[in-house]
Image: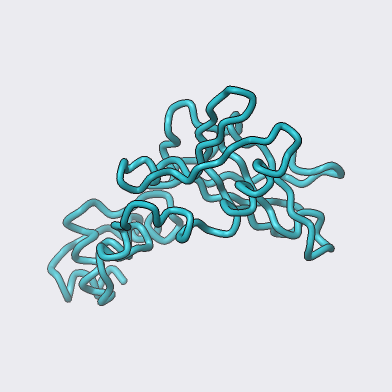
Length: 183
């Protein structure tokens, strides 16, 4: 990879830098990101954010249609609870959808919520979170197959106070699974 990048773009990077990119410990800075995207023949926005410039901008009102499954599940659970919480999807026109997925009003209190889908891997549950998280936002982890055996089991965990590891543009969090859930 290092040699291909230098050969295609003239950009020189250390082997350790490539290792950090691959390990998701850091992200390439803009000039190197653009060179890397050219070398890999992909869009720079896709390489950095997983989206193309065309898909990064959505029309107002489209947030609910574009919400991911974990966000939709949590919105449904909030609205179905006995407290009768009202849920709105963050408005793409405000730019808030980059750092907050849902806004919930329950018992007169407003909650800005970031939803992180977790994946269970053996005795651990791993989450990828936006970084930084919007100030004052709650971080809720949603995990399908949370008990490890039942495909219909879905669990939600408050991750707001958990310490995630910054990884250049996002953060990762890995929790050990105990008998009653993650610890």
